[in-house]
Length: 187
Length: 187
Image 1: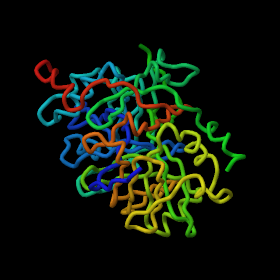
Image 2: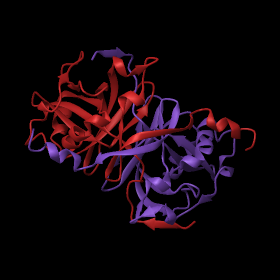
Image 3: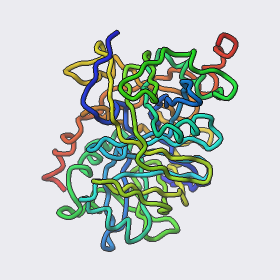
Image 4: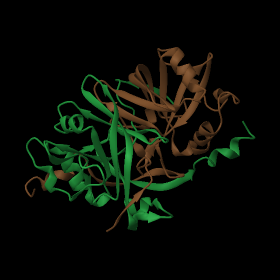
């Protein structure tokens, strides 16, 4: 099987899609992001990376907070829309119902079944992007999406971006921290 | 629909699974990671976050390089195994066939259809984790996984971790930068 060297680019993997929320000039604003990931389980730390031109960045810098909202597949149009238009021109507070936890500078999306409030602990300055690293300080889940107190993906229906398509999560392929045990004696 | 506040934790989203490669004490070592993501498209920048106790970290710090290898669903046992055992006790160079590009300190996994060499541009020190931020400097794809010069997910079969299950990528839910256009006139 031949390996083809291509021009340098980010590796082709599915990207979990989240909607980042922030208060910008006192108004709720929402931005769809694929440049999201976890950095630490304990304490819970995640990041979002947002291009410097984005309207949202100033709000995050000003308040020190952003939120993570995990959109369900049923909101794919609204999710895509939040990545297409800028809060500079469009009032994105009207797309969703905002709600707040203890932190009044961190708007969350009620229609998203999983929500987290993140307090900035570090910012990394890349040439074209601000990378906001935040510790999760509040966490909310829709009651009817829980199975054994854990969000059930059959109910939360998270979206992934691969190339130019949003996709749903697919079938199970194995159990983590278990599937590999069969190899322990062989290798 | 009631929102339940839970203890703070990383939000429930699917996590793309990659195998990080590094040369540790001159030997190829591989570590399975869900704490991976993209930070910038141009230049292509990605990160991995690895617990400080991990054997791999010293190799990355010493060489200044790590690799990203995207395992196909058919390698779920080997992938899980690489997250279960430490290179301190097990010689993980035997699990896969290693190959090298121009950079001789950055081993890649031949059996993974997508591979990238990353040069560290920044390290973020979290309480329990080293976050290695790297620019992609080489990129390889299996020729037979390409469709229109782009890796086809039906052939690369990437894995996602959600809770304790590895899952495959599922069905299309919409087209990015297009699905939201229908809302442009309405909102």
